[in-house]
Image (cartoon, rainbow, N blue to C red; front, top):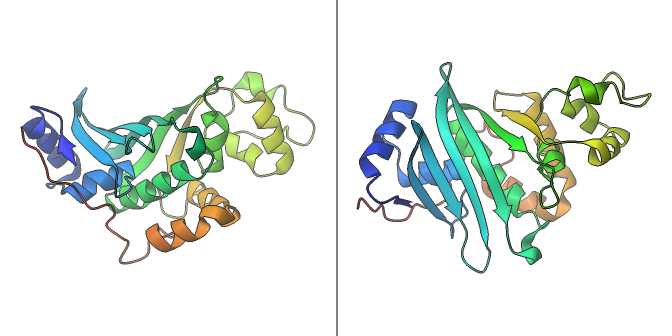
Length: 231
């Protein structure tokens, strides 16, 4: 873990203001969900703590986060997660990073994670993030076009509860702001846990290494931090 050049003092002060204490390298790494071989860079942006995650060159992924306070609650703003290597896309990397981030965010008393789930030719977040437990209200223009059997849906997760709803959202879904509620036993946690159990290829890694239950005692402290640069 390193601080951006010249930003050690401001970033450390921002972290203390937000969390009420000095953060150690594994805290910063955990807030980003960093795998052990990732680089985590920390600074400030618009009065928020800014964290950038990047993988080794052969893996080619990057993520960007801001941590801020909103109405006495700590919020992570996820501003993009990109996997550039085709051989890693759809292989569960994002899920593993997100699982680690969830556990650490809850341990550090973060209340929610917010993002804009995009739908473009190169983005499928509008569908993937709800599968992970992110939710948001359906716009009136979408609700009025819901087919029979789905017409009572009020939010994205209402649609994701059944196969017909998932098919409809995959075809008709749009770019939408979504939130993962980190409150104990929230619907977001329930959906995320169910999704992990369905993903046989990554289930053991997520459950055994990072822990599916975010409230158990002794939750792993996460990625080992690199030496801090104060330059």
